[in-house]
Image (tube, rainbow over all chains, first blue to last red; front, side):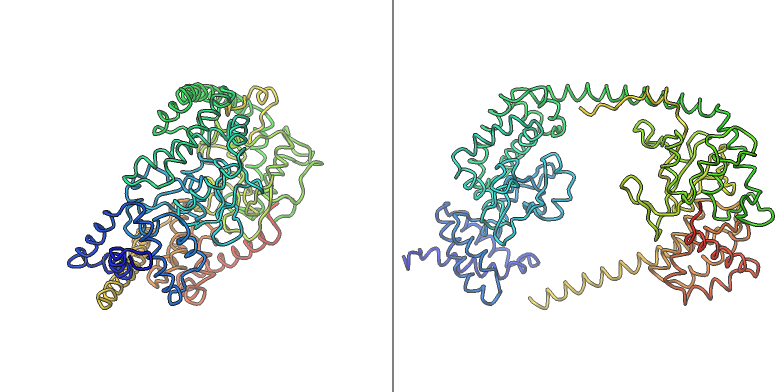
Length: 488
Length: 135
């Protein structure tokens, strides 16, 4: 022993340090260097856990000296040298995470489920993880930083709200899944009431509990698939499994079953069943019934809207509006142009011509939807939605059962509203921004889309106009028959 | 070793650059080929043709090619022969706005005398719509 460090350690450290600085060479040259890496790996594998810790710390002390040259962050070095972990070495040999190659498995990182990239756990604060929809079922994402280096926010779903309500802030290396998770567990357990209080919260909140269950089974799976599991696996697995069982036993089962479908996958059903005593299967059955109810409501709404549109098409007011707008395409209404005009040439007053057909002068023939006195002055095409709705028109695109409707397949009589793409003018309608001034037209027949001119196809202008509304006047009696699509 | 790594790096960079170049020229070639097939515009044109013109214009904005510019200008002239709706100027907006110096002489050469007048009127109407709205 020299200064508390074994000679064997120093030799292995020397090889390791040498290999560390030549790691990129190992990656590109396979011949003689490969043998050296193998030797180092074998030596490392032969050590027991305590020896690995000592080696780790020795290596870190050597690297600390190198930090002056390499500007390696001092705070990170301190974390590495003070924790009982072999993360640095494990990363060096890519052993601990090497088996996390299955794309269906997420990785546990301080309470958060994260992505696995190149067989490594990606830190949950990274953009790729925060933007990943694959991880939505595990609850919120890591969006609130603890505001300092070497500070990590533990997931409140697993470790409770902490002091500020957003999750415990723990001092650790925030890029190390092993250190971060171990540190979260330690801090969580510091409060003797924490586990009990968190279980009570899970019992009260079925959505939170379903997310907790999803994290629990996924964490157990990610630990199972590793040939050399993270050191936190045993303690975390025990903690989460016990809490899951207790909470699901006391929770309102009907409520929980209605939230569980949000987290169920073909891969976790059996595990959730095991932890919750069969609630996974009940949730699956609930989901199947819910889907049947949703389908029934969608079909009913589709039929109701279909009948409403047929009634609207027979409405004399719509027939007269179409006649007016068609006739006006050859006229210069309200001095918008001079003389006569070509029916196929727009004069950039589409909204004015459609509005005029709907709000005609009192002297004009035909039945009307509204009086000229109500004419919505100044409103551009893209802004037509609000005044159309005031007159009892309904945007068919808002109904989930009619989500496939397009200007091309819309029934005759539809009033189609478009926004302009790449526009410098933006208008906000119901909190959403659209490109102005847009376009509006009435589908008069299969190949007749009319505004201030007649187009033989929808005026999409090669993708520069995007449909945002397809309107029909739907009478109240039909609207009352439209059912809410059940969500739970 | 350093030399070997440097060689690898250079080889990769060269491969990346050459692949990007061939991708760019391939796209130009595809649009030229498609535009060449348009000898006469049927009816008032169609959304399919408008999309081709718009995409070619966007491609020219990113990767200038005199040959593609000539084809685009020729087809746009064909379109104006049958359709003088003001909003069609938006289709060539990207290349007109970002490559004005290079593209306008080509467009002016391709447009017939009558279509040149139409084009100017269309621009004015388009500007008026942006300024005053269409309601």
